[in-house]
Length: 143
Image 1 (cartoon, rainbow, N blue to C red):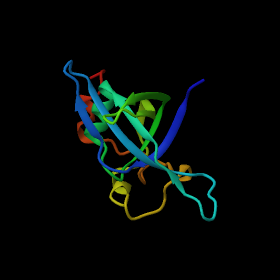
Image 2 (cartoon, helix red, strand yellow):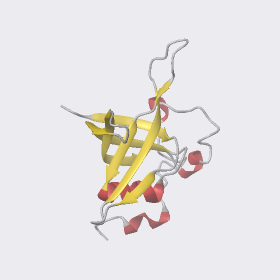
Image 3 (tube, rainbow, N blue to C red):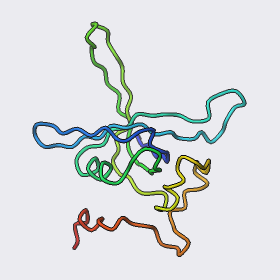
Image 4 (cartoon, one colour):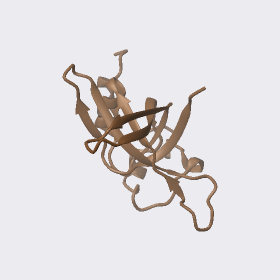
């Protein structure tokens, strides 16, 4: 089974492009904290991700550098020949589903706190409800 679940922060704004046929493609990387850390080793990984269609449009509209996202997807490998004639191998996580994992208030502290990791994925505000963007109803199919 090829299944990936990640929670991490955007390392930069998503790079969004559009095909001639109108398909939206979003490429980005996440900083994903490692659960177990060695003394002198890295504390995070930085996987490359790609999203297509409505998922890419959702990411473009609501996510920016430093924001946390939860994703479900799959690993996809590939290769191409670069301009120098060398074969380059790629590994991407293809996003199949994504969701908010923090409230608007905690997004403002994204660069200043170190509360990353899976233990702090509470998306609820103090009132117990997730903070949803005001214009999200445009994305919903059951109005």
